Length: 121
Image (cartoon, rainbow, N blue to C red; front, side, top):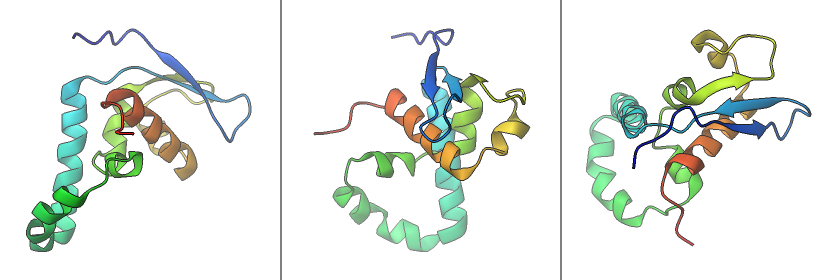
């Protein structure tokens, strides 16, 4: 199925009354780039320790939102999908990087939920 990136969704900020962010669906290659960047980061930090544990962890990994979120680079996801917001500052890479942790984490969870297969029940 082709993705219509002109179709956007407005998310009301759960912790800031009256504030919102508008996002678009992510393309498969944008998700792939975010996943690859996160893997490279983890390998750079943990090196061979991760390689030794990978096969066992993959077998036991729960399919939950927190696990999925950890698979992606937040910066790449947010820069790809945020198209508008209610803040006075314009949407751009520099201002996306200035989001507080609560807002960033909330947005990444929402983006992952909307752009990956449904979670197992």
